[in-house]
Each structure stands twice: as structure tokens, then as C-alpha cells.
Image (cartoon, rainbow, N blue to C red; front, side, top):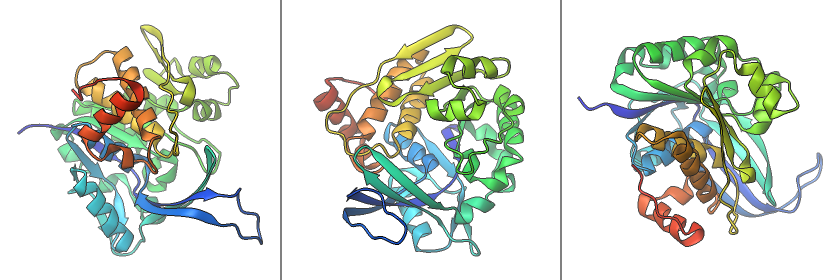
Amino acid sequence: MQQTDLLVVGELNVDLLLDQVNGFPVIGQEILADKMLLTLGSSSAIFAANSAALGSRVAFCGMLGKDLFGEFILRELQSKKVDTRFVVESPVHQTGLTMILNYDQDRANVTYGGAMNHFSINDIPLQALHRFRHLHVSSYFLQRALQEDITDLFAAAKAAGLSTSLDLQWDPANTWDFPGEACLPYVDFFLPNEKELLSLTGQSEVEEAIASLSGFANTIVVKKGIHGATAYSSTGVLHADAYVNDHFVDAIGAGDSFNAGFINRFLNGHDLPECLRLGNLMGAINTTAAGGTAAFATIQSVKQTAQQLFNLDFQPW
């Protein structure tokens, strides 16, 4: 039986985007938005969908409610050729939702966790891990029931022969309680952005943060937005400049699209510089359309955007 490239374990929610708002709201006051969009949300789902768009064979494991938002998410994932057989539908808990207010090139988010708060290691097909090549986990801090078993999950994946990656994302509680010393030895690629890395380690400089993790982490890839991305590994430090998009729409999911490009290249046998390059390109392409997946409708549209906006040809293998 042919292995599936990716098992994505993570949170599932819809995103309700309010665009072109005139500032952020103040308690007791009302503001207007000129545009609204309901779309597939969650870091994990954006990564899964865009990985599939780039040609990877992807399965998803997470929890939804048996409700209209859950049905919407399943349809969206399936339309993007993501295998949803491991998605659990809860008859008790509602599907999560994030409301996003976009203002200029910044945003404010409010998330209702719902079913994602109750997704645990017992919902993950550990006995089937050998059917996959790579495990990716995102949004650790939003998955409360999975947190205490995160190290066991990655250890099981490595024991089954998988490569692994982790993107913690932001901690809404701002406590940054993560068992890094126990978990990160089982993570091949740790993928924080710069702000998350500094918050996690309590350091003020990236080099100090990397040093504090170097005793137990493997490759750390730090995403820096318009300043590119830097990989720190046992072989040294590599930096790749960003691709600047002059037709910016929003940055929702840009880091997840970076991850999709990076892991796509890794699974196709490319070296670290090429993984960084394609990660940066996919992150930039992400910002050309609203939401995290609209810029990745088809591989043809992705290639067209790369050619027209960045004068680049690429093959997704």
C-alpha cells in the first residue's frame, strides 16, 4: 500500500473575515466593515489544504461539531483533496470559529474553541501511523486535551518511522507552557515565527532563544515575514530572503503556507536552502488573496501567480 505523504493533526474551525474595517472596535461602540468572507480556517487546515494543492497526499485528524460549520469544513477539505476519514464529528461540542478583523496589514482575532478543546490523543489513529511519511502538528495551545500527550504523539510518530514538524502558533493565554525539552527531540522541524520563539523562550534576541533550545531541538526554522526565514541546524545557519508581494491582500495563513511549501520540498528530497526558498514563495503567494487558502485554488493558479508576480517557475516535486 502506498504511503500517504502527510498526516496533519490539529484544530479545525471556520474563519469569519471582516475586511476594510475603519480601525478596531472600542467597547460600547460600533464600527463597519466593507467586506465579509466565511472561509476554511485554522492553521492546521490551511496547511493541509495548501499542501494538497502543491501535490502532497494529505490526511487530516481533528474534531468538529455535527453542525453547519462542521459540514462546511468537511466539504472544503474534501474539495481540496484532503482525506477526512480521521476527522471526528462530535454530537456534543460545536465547531470552532475565529472572527478576524483585518485593518491595513494587521488584524485582531477572537476564537471560540468548541470541539477543538476536546480533541485528544485517543482520537488519533496511532496504530495507523506507519501508513504516513510525515506528521505535522499545529496550534498546540488551542488544543487543550492534546497538550499533556504531545510528547507521546511525537515519540510514537518517530517510532513508526515518520519525519515530523511542529508549529506551536501563538499562546492566547500568554503562559507558553510547553514541554520543549521532552518534546522537541522528537520534532525534526520546529517552525515558530520570530515573535513566538521569543515569547516561548523568554529571550529578547533570536540568537539567545536558539541557544536556549539548542541542547534538545533539531532543526529550528524561524519565520520572519517580510524579512524571510532562517534555519538553525547542526550544520549551521541558513537564511533565505522573502519574496515581497506588492499586491498585498492579507497575511492570514501566510506562515501555514510557508510550512506547506517547506515540507513539500522536504518530502520531495530537496535540501534545506530549497525548502526555505519555496516556503518563502508560498508564504508570499498566500498574501495575494483573502484568507489562507484562496490563493491555492489549483496548482496551475499557484504556478501562474509565481510567474506573474515573482517571475519564478517552480515544479511541486
